[in-house]
Length: 333
Length: 229
Image (cartoon, rainbow over all chains, first blue to last red; front, side, top):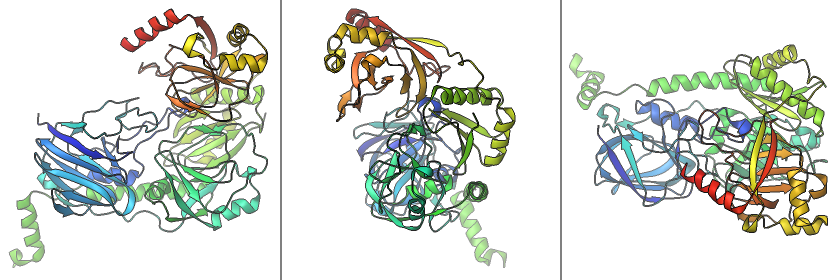
């Protein structure tokens, strides 16, 4: 069985192993975790011919530099518009390439996006927790955060020449404001405060990690909510603290909390929002629960179609040349 | 006790029994939780019991808020008269030496001797209300009134895992090294995160918890056994 090894030359904070996540344990204080942008993460695996949810690396704006010290492996890079480089050669993101012994791969913050994904044609050796290698960042449980000096070992590493090349980027996400269903604790706000939340503009603050994204913008005063009972939180809950500042809870959210939630971001849009950066403007739009379900279903269909399209291998170099030739017509003349 | 229902985004329904914390509301939450465990609707993923409400999360491809609400209305018969019987769990705690940095402060605040504070803690009627904050953080109700103290104005950093902490009527055994503003009464060698794949958490919501006092030598022995077990 071919093994490939990488030395972690540099890893910024919050560069973590991620996988499909661990739903089903929220009652014990454990959120599902998994990739912040599930669409990009799934695309990386599927384009490589992997199962959805196979363990990969989520790269923060801090960036990641790996040295391949043994073997060779094909890998996929998706997510935000990050800078990708092999040795001194610059590449675009949303690509599949092979890295071999002696080569240095660097993925660092680029023009846009907050998270990049690195999936491998191989299994990353890492500890699982509750059946998942997804990292819960505040505890470190699961596969864990990458540290400089660490070795990443891939067992079962493959070179998949038929997969090399650019990955078609998705255009299935809704454009425009981030869709929310107001509540469930909107009774703790004046009606005009709830209106203000869905009409005014906010900006992403620097306080953004895998637990949540604090926003800057108009103050959202609470009405008589000094001591409300702790209530459940989900990925997407917009919790407003006592000083009137909203935070969108994300992949590593706490599961209950005593601050009222003014609204909840629908699940397809939590992935879109996760790629926003500090300073970027955010606007929300309110929809009903039924509209949210309809959008989730439509999005799921669009996602399945997109992933099916990019899952098809392009074929070997010889096959691709043949196809290109046919496409250009002269072979058929 | 009639629940009210609220849609949470595209994937959850919040079933709320009261605005204020009460024994009755929590009983209703646990009764509905048990009813849904026994009779789960199509598409339900998980439930999250809290103080006054139960979150029911679902797969929006398979079901929706109104189908789930209809299911709940049709199966739920209310909390019943008695308290649901939770499993009894024992948590060992050492109140000695470096493990109880706030024992003297709680003693000063309550006018009880340190020994009386310990006995009052041991005498509490503890019950798991809900989990929250971090994996395995189970909020226990039932701290004796005589030793109920408010949170500290400023959290203390790097409080070790296994710390037994109190604030107001609640008690918690921490599972991670974390900052806390609660008062630290002791340290437990009992694993809340058990490492057992079939029962990874010691308590379920609704369980009854008894603290059992151990001395420092026993703590050291048990802690070592756990680390090498």
